[in-house]
Image (tube, rainbow, N blue to C red; front, side):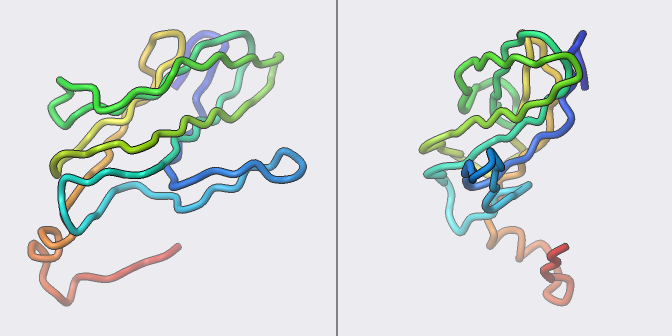
Amino acid sequence: MMTENLQLRYTLLCDDVRIEMGNKISLMGIFQNIMVEKLPVSLIKFAVINHWMGEGSHETEVRILSPDRSNLVVTSQSTPIELAAGGFTDNVSFFINVVFPSAGTYWVQTLADTVVLEEFPLIVANAGDVAAMQPAEEISETIN
């Protein structure tokens, strides 16, 4: 997704991010969905990482919307990013004590210069309900 002179290459969700020696970033606990034993759930901490390419000065923001898109669950502060021509940067938005009140498909939006560039689903589910919906022999774990 892109606006003029700015391209969002990817977005990842994870439990935590650390900056290592050599300005490398380490991502811990990358996830796509949230499975919990009991709802509502409060996530103590998680991060959204956006990888940008392009040039110029831009303002970015990450929002999480309720399943019906009518309520803002949480939003990051607007963050300025500066890119030299052909450059890239990673922007990390940390979220603390975010409450997901019920199961459903929440929406993670990434904005640049007030334009929504990407929106993807974040499914919050009760693990017991998910297990009850599937025959036992189909439940498996795959780690790629």
